Image 1 (cartoon, rainbow, N blue to C red):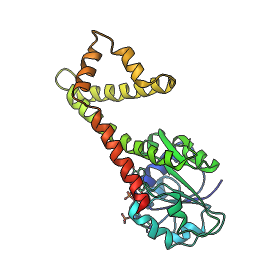
Image 2: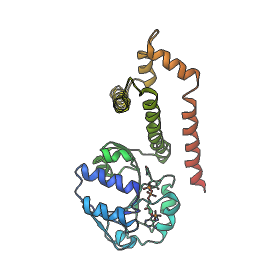
Image 3: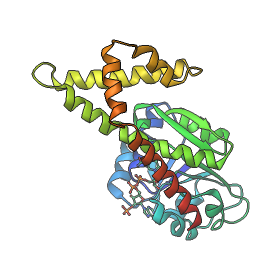
Image 4: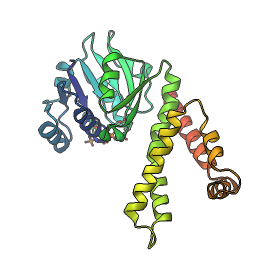
Length: 258
Ligand SMILES: NC(=O)c1ccc[n+]([C@@H]2O[C@H](COP(=O)([O-])OP(=O)(O)OC[C@H]3O[C@@H](n4cnc5c(N)ncnc54)[C@H](OP(=O)(O)O)[C@@H]3O)[C@@H](O)[C@H]2O)c1
């Protein structure tokens, strides 16, 4: 099993490491020392080893994960010495493989991945580009790996890692809208999340059927489902979601040209 070392111990490192450990991953995990409290907690509770500095993480890891914020990524990597044959796994949004290679010596394999915080619950659909056996197996411990063979797919797919976040706000609005004297908030929350999971499970199970077709099959004439769906369409409720996706796609592509 390869030694994997994280440079940047923030939220992503925290939920990914928690997720893979809970999912049975037993390989050695090294951590950079900055953000001491998180690193110490992960070392104590999730069997990780904190290194003295970033270079020690690189020296002692076969797979190095760069998990700083995008603005810190290139300078952090440029300050480190890698050895040919090492694997760099970047989880940094908006930084393409070509950019990463520009600050690395020859002979480093670079893979990108986009785990989301449901990794902590063993349920991250993790986009990976390009495919790599070790990386794919690693993220299978905290959800399911989705390798793609095209970086444009990865960029467009990364937009959905942000849509994932928006779902929580939608859940919150639905809980607020439906809870009150007739339905306690915890029960509403259980139903909102349960319905969302149910809809996702059915759409995945019937992947050959477009989700709009599933909706049309439920929201037939005279149903309460249709009454509400018609109102949502009349108010153009879905257009802003499309616009937000387009905005992110533009931003993620623009950072490539910077
Ligand atoms: N969080 C998510 O949901 C999510 C999802 C998908 C992808 N990502 C990607 O994951 C990356 C990390 O996100 P995050 O949410 O974990 O951010 P974060 O919580 O801000 O963590 C980043 C960590 O990197 C540290 N850092 C910065 N420069 C460093 C250096 N030179 N050496 C060592 N550590 C350094 C920061 O320390 P200081 O705070 O001291 O600067 C911070 O602890 C981002 O690039 C983001 O695009 C995040």
